[in-house]
Amino acid sequence: MTAVLEGNWNYPTRIWAGPGRISELGAACADLGIRRPLLVTDRGLASHAMLQSALAALPAARLFADVQGNPVAKNVEAGLSAYRAGNHDGVIAFGGGSALDVGKVIAFMSGQTRPLWDFEDVGDWWTRADPAGIAAVVAVPTTAGTGSEVGRAGVILNEATHQKKIIFHPKMMPGIVISDPELTVGLPAGITAATGMDAFVHCFEAYCAPGFHPLADGVALEGMRLIKQYLPRAYANGADIEARSRMLVAASMGATAFQKGLGGVHAIAHPVGAWYGTHHGLSNAVILPYVMVHNRDAIDERMRVVARVLDLPRSDFDAVLGWVLEFRRELGIPASLAEVGVQVTQPGVIGQEAAIDPAAGGNPVPTDAAGYERLFRSAVQGDLTLAA
Image 1: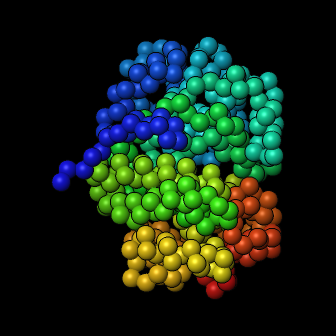
Image 2: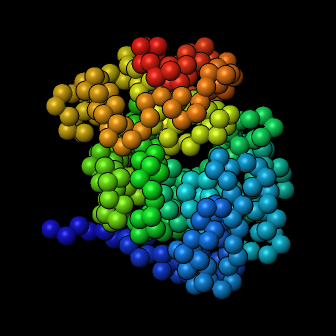
Image 3: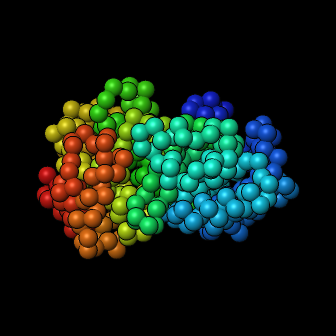
């Protein structure tokens, strides 16, 4: 039976999914009234053939590629300068999570008069923005991990404080997403694994976050099922279009689900990324089992459902934890943060930053700075017994 790989959806925004859909980029811009787009991408994609083809099809578009991994405020500021100097009227955010986040924030800031940090996701700070000053965005993901293409926020590093800040507004959601699996075929196996595990952690933490949100829970569970089935295939064979298409969907599902909340994995990964420059998805993948053990008593009941969805032999916490550990090994994910160059040089700072990170509010077990410091140490040392 031939798999269906194409579809148009309107949840949580308009998504044009399927192989070759990048050819509709011009139509997407026209649909949103964008005539002079600024195409925002990261430095690694700037000269890539797929991006150059997209530019060639849009004569009025201009390229901005000064985006780094773990993007910082100066990337946004430089993009804003390019946007205004070119008299652009919309943004194409093209790439992985960093490019998507920066592209969305540039579009958001294009018509604002207040500084960037005035719109951090704190209380109702988003109401400070002028919604009429938010430019339209077409999002084109080239990795299957962050799900930023269906998100209403961007994560930007404040270098002055060494903190990752979430810039949020409900109207930051891209107007159209082009979800073309052919754009992800060239991803190296290691990046495929790290970004795919990022999507899994989004689904897992969203499902475990406290509160009543069965819509998010259902999306999260199906996202985990898809990732279990298709991430190993995409990892083993990058040209597997069916697997690539399903992983793009799962990534968008993870970001849709975590409107319910995230948790301790992200709370630790954010300061670890800010201080050590680690890949966000890889950090999440490494940290996950340590936070699972820490949260065991609070999530034990929910693991019965997760185990059934993942079709595990037993329906309990230990079965899910054992599967996570084996799944990571299968995907070449390191067992400790030390293996990705993180040392216990400032555990107190990581603990304090994790405790005040916005994601910490969704952790099933309220955890203070000392608790997060202990979890950080356990993840660096690769010792699950320290997390209990």
